[in-house]
Picture 1 (cartoon, helix red, strand yellow):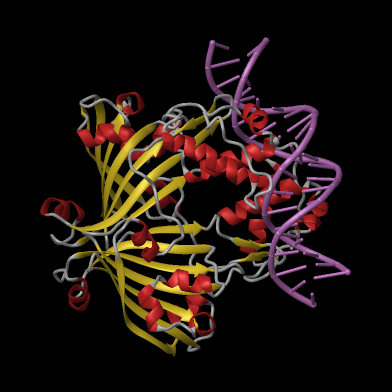
Picture 2 (tube, each protein chain N blue to C red):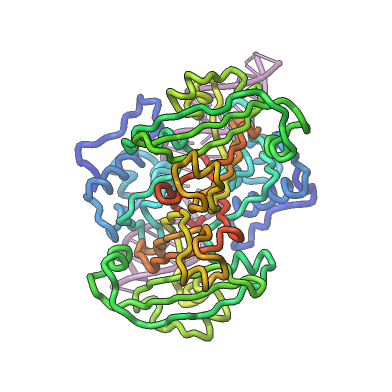
Length: 246
Length: 246
DNA sequence: TAGTGGTCTAGACCACATT
DNA sequence: ATGTGGTCTAGACCACTAC
């Protein structure tokens, strides 16, 4: 089922279970494993790759979490092959657009320090009226308006951001470069009609349907480092999610 | 940190790691563990509860997957306590509404066998024109229209559904009762303006913003058993998601 | 009955962050 | 230097499904 030449690299810093997960995923992508096919069972994988069963199980669990396979006791591990390819991780819109070849560009509309509103301080776990950094951007794809993005961040996180870098890359990439790693995000996705000013910025008619998203993102230490409300053109953007029953 | 009286029940069919995860989660809910607090470390939990370290780790992993805590090597496991409580699992709208006390009711508009369109047969992995069950419902909360729901299912799955049961409970609950377990779902969430007929059914103005969702759901065996497109009033419904970096 | 995945143990060694 | 979580092993026994 997997490339018969393939073997794990024990001197690599990449964990064995992850190497194995990638090999199995590649086999699925290549079509060596068709939808409905069973994966080789755990003990066979154990001897095939020379690792212990817990390591094999952890690799397969990765595929389960990604929604590629389903497991059932007494039956085996079977491949799902959906027609629609799945996405949506904890990544930035900019990176998503880049990846899909949509030539993203960014206009920074506002970048300044401000006093936190009640809502913002609550979301970020700050004192009322504490100073924060407020950011407003317009994101375009292929030169056409796609999203209006408002972000609020603690000064400690975003005090050093400058407009030039924000226009050249995504916010998450910049924060990551300064040592902040997004780990958990709470997100709310809905719809609303465009107000006049929003419509103008997004090049749609007033009243057009927009996708709305509000998000609070937490770092390595469980601390909120960003609160954001975004608006997307409903005719050009949607969220794709894969849900897995635990 | 956890209830000092608490101990695991080794004769219960509930796995030890899950019992432990629930105990830790309860401690967070109760506020014994405040946001930013560190959990007791793994080896201490091992001796406190008399289980092995892998079992402790698996329990904590459950909390990570739910977005309650964040782990960092050399630091520890720290609690996130968001202001907004998170939801969104692989559950039905009906159950969600029930749980939040919103008195859901359902009107079955269409329930009949039909030939699959290209899109539907593709999503369900059937032959073109194969017979399927088509279901259209209107869902109300507190007696007010909230959603228009269209579902397509293989006859083998939904051939026995009847209007009376569909008006009395959620689709997923009925399918579950007949042995079908949703395991993975691919979902796409967006926005669009209400057309005249949709507006009438949802009691909004034509052109009002609606949340759209299309979903394909897979069972225990990786087989698609449902394709659905739903429309929700944008002023009354949104999706809440917790994303966790893997 | 045979074969599958699910749970659990009791260690070992390592990488990383903090002090 | 210490303490944390991350990886990995080599078994054991159990529960479920299918034949």
